[in-house]
Length: 93
View 1: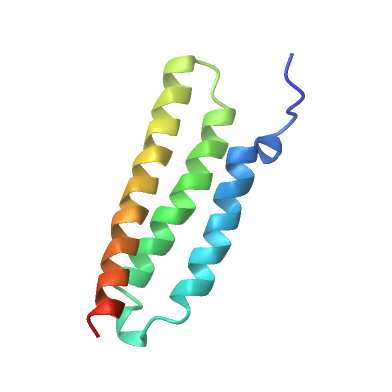
View 2 (view 1 turned 135 degrees about the vertical axis):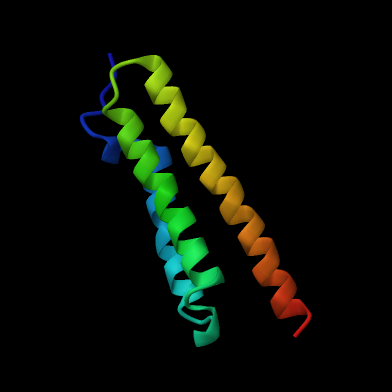
């Protein structure tokens, strides 16, 4: 039996929470003109990762669990793409 009492005990959730903190701190340095663009998109994507992991923890059926984990994985890919764009903008500035 698992020792996890909460989604907060899951290492993957803990790491996604830490990633959210990093992304928020990083996007604070973005220009104000990006507040409703890349900043907002990156923040929504990173929050979606930990939120969907948490939601999957409280689903009873494996199909539902997989669905929420797939959404979290997709949000991670979305964030990765946005980071690539941000890096390109910085490198080409």
